[in-house]
Amino acid sequence: MLGPLSAGESVLAFAHYEPGPGRAPQACEVTASSGEGGWTLSGTKEPVPHGARADVLVVSALLPDGGTGLFLVAGDAAGLTRTGYAT
Image 1: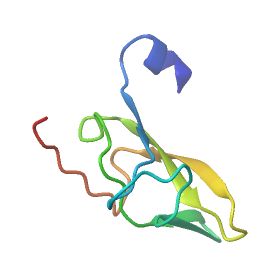
Image 2 (image 1 turned 45 degrees about the vertical axis):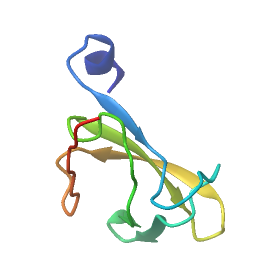
Image 3 (image 1 turned 90 degrees about the vertical axis):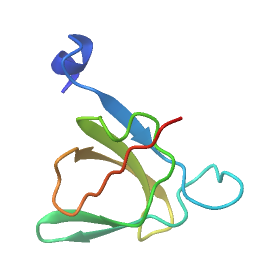
Image 4 (image 1 turned 180 degrees about the vertical axis):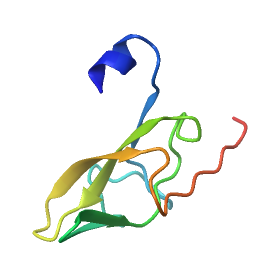
């Protein structure tokens, strides 16, 4: 993944902020659960600067043990919805 990023061929975005007032330093609303096929993330991140055009998202999520995990999510992942907006 680092090769395309360093060559400018891929865009990465950090999805940490969640809707609502204030900005928590940890993931609160987006949760991660593990299963046979890997991890499933549920929830909304907003705003995500450059998220609508990113090839890969680094998403923070609340883990089952209460910690925070970071997950690489492909921009074309099943179930992922992205909406761009003018800033």
